[in-house]
Length: 254
Image (cartoon, rainbow, N blue to C red; front, side, top):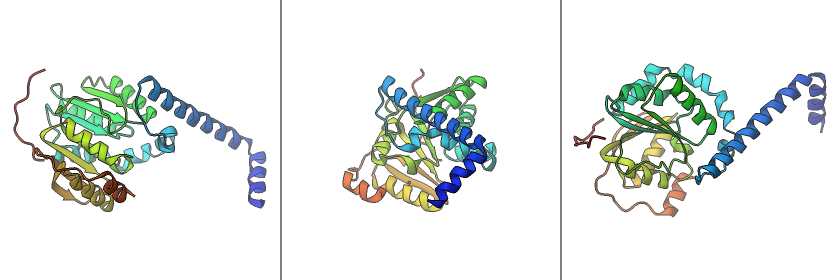
């Protein structure tokens, strides 16, 4: 009770604090409304967790992430994942969107990059950045990780940075990624910690959909399996969840 009294007294002495809090609540409320309206208008099945409804909270970290993860660092991991001229790439959970922009430049005019995220703020920010930098080979998608809307066998590389642990339905996501990847395609997972990457790698391998090619600290790279092993039952995933080499192929010109 005493703490509450002290907080009220502080707000009375500093009314600007109350105004700032009011603006923040308004912004987050509008973000949540935008998220729900987007889901209804686009008829997407999306989760209703606070992390999605109040996505502007994540933008507090974006300037910090941009500083500690400069473009050369991001490009290194994209190259290691097999992104090159002419590649078709899908990144899920892109945040501020710097990595998809770098991937779009690496893929060039003959390539294509799809960037998917559930945060309306992130989607709008990347869409504006892509228009500003005239990246015509970058397509931004608002949607859940397990519903990309892409055709079967349409991408060469799936790149997931600091997002795999956030996907609510990891089993459904891995099935979707297996569907959209071409034979021998690459799934690359980069997490904040080696522990999170180890856990993600175990889940991916247990799915029977991908074969581990490399795991190095926070990074793991997998190859799409041509013959699919029976996936782990639903209860197994619930219990666990409680986070390049490319094959030569002939591609049909578009």
